[in-house]
Amino acid sequence: LLVLQKGTEIGYTAFIPVVSERSIVKLDADRAAKKGERWRKIVQSAAEQSGRARLPEVHSLHSWQQLCDRFTDFDLVLLPWEGEEAAGLKETLKAKNIGAGVGAGASNGTSILVIIGPEGGLAVSEVEKARSCGALTVSLGPRILRTETAGLACGVAVLYESGDFS
Image 1: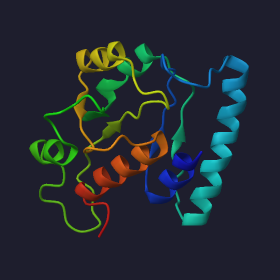
Image 2 (image 1 turned 90 degrees about the vertical axis):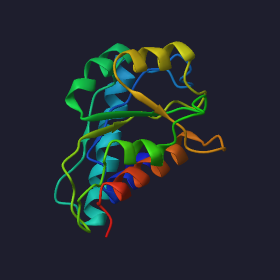
Image 3 (image 1 turned 180 degrees about the horizontal axis):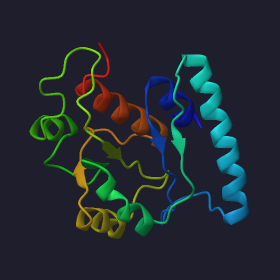
């Protein structure tokens, strides 16, 4: 809920909830629909509070395969993962020229999906599936972050590098 609220305030454009092997909360269709309504209200309230004219979209609950099928909707798909040792987030964004030639407060129009794992972390099979669909795994540094913290930290870094903060 914190990621929905704060992510809306800082500029996220969409949220796609995903069922993962290690998700602690398991939702059936009815519970997912009710949660979706609640999530939309949180996003709407945060958008009003922060003066956003456009609401971020809150998508329905996706399976891992449904999420992978959407990767082609994005220019770049990033998966922060504690098992990644070589590629850091900053280096990956620079290598992909995110923010190149962007002025203060402007966006370069690159559509980026950031996948944040559940409380229990991602299963290796999920990471491998995401990689096979085109996701790039990145490290967020030496610490293991909570889901909420990773979602906000990674999102802020991407928005900063893409020129969204002046």
